[in-house]
Image 1: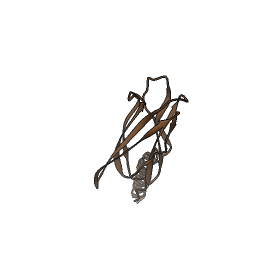
Image 2 (image 1 turned 90 degrees about the vertical axis):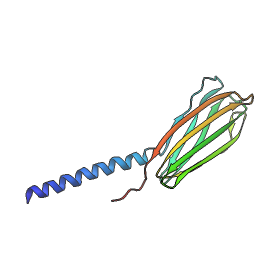
Image 3 (image 1 turned 180 degrees about the horizontal axis):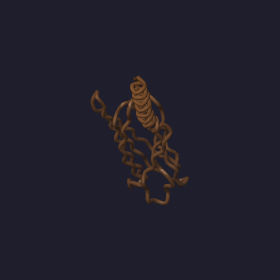
Image 4 (image 1 turned 90 degrees about the horizontal axis):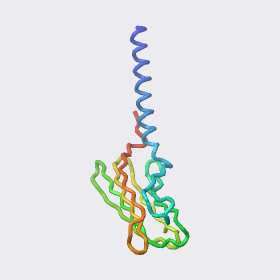
Length: 141
């Protein structure tokens, strides 16, 4: 009887640890910043902010020189059990200010993100390509 009780406690503790690991991975994207790459001196940083629990928002950002004019293009491809969907947003950047943009994605899913920032001459000055696996955020026993 004592052996059986110890085995049950061990199995419960082990399964709790596995659930904690799975759930911490699901929440780990909340509040993350993913940086793009640039070699243009007018661009200090660019990338996306990822935030949320059941639904994640993908929000582009850019830090530029004051007079930077250009545009950005953000695309998200989501693949889940329900199928595949693609969302794309584009807008202008005037005097270094990025117009408001946000793409929402529900869990669980795999998302592929592409972002390109171009100057007003059409030259790509920042690029981001990232794949993320988003497990369910509220997996229950």
